[in-house]
Length: 88
Image (tube, rainbow, N blue to C red):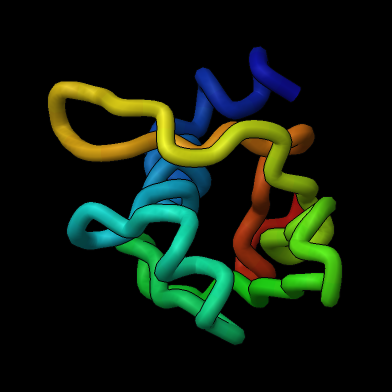
């Protein structure tokens, strides 16, 4: 799949932009949301269980929250998110 995406830069950019939010969105804010709009333009569904473990972004589980970065904050997930408009 990586080789295919490297040959289709617009598709790769769309997938990468689907992983980015505008602003600095910390874990405390995510747990209060149902959906969030990505830089790509589509929404990601957020599922917060009662015990606040295994929070899901679409079908991906967040494994680590609030990793500081020079340009914002990172939340590590266990799989690649793909916008519905892209078929892989």
